[in-house]
Length: 247
View 1 (cartoon, rainbow, N blue to C red):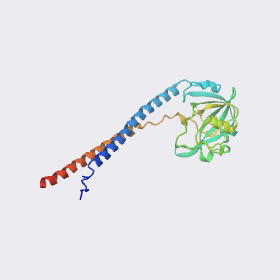
View 2 (tube, helix red, strand yellow):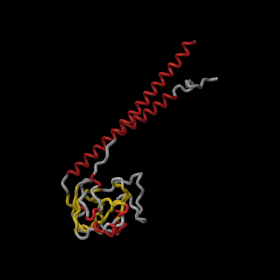
View 3 (tube, rainbow, N blue to C red):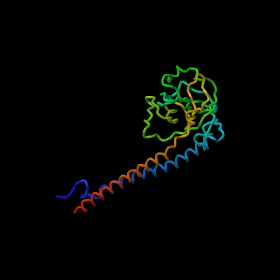
View 4 (cartoon, rainbow, N blue to C red):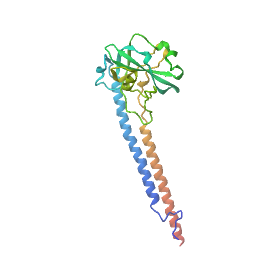
């Protein structure tokens, strides 16, 4: 009868092949994280350069052409608070809530959506924060933002139900019946609103960059697996050598 015991003589290459495959996967993940590290560093450098540039005065949507995302801008106009949209849910300092997005009618015509910032769950209704519904002409300082492709983990917006999970200026403008909505939006800066809500300035943070730690983790796991495989291989050789000497 063939020997199929712990020595694995029927399939002597099965374990080495499995280990080699696992090592290739772990090393590949580590290299992928190093590539992501370089990409994230470039992204952070671009964002810092945009945020350190002087503020641009946007009199109309055309003035934003050629401006990079996260450039400081100023827009002037009048809010249409009755058309406020809530985007989320979001969190701030561990508390749940929403971002209040309000159309701003520019002085020169057309509309720009302004993400005025975070409102907690119990203050999501505009009637609970009337002081923040500023009337008349305003000047808003903030960051220029552009829509990003929908992520795999973010639900699709549902304009019919009024469920907005990400800011989409064209779709929002159409849902509100606004003509000439700018294809970008402005994330309001940290200047406090009357009554303290909404709380702006949330888009000023730099993206997290932990890809180096992830790469080290994957490479470390590969090293540990290689060490274990070498120890097992050495033990197998000693086990074969023992019976041979006894014979």
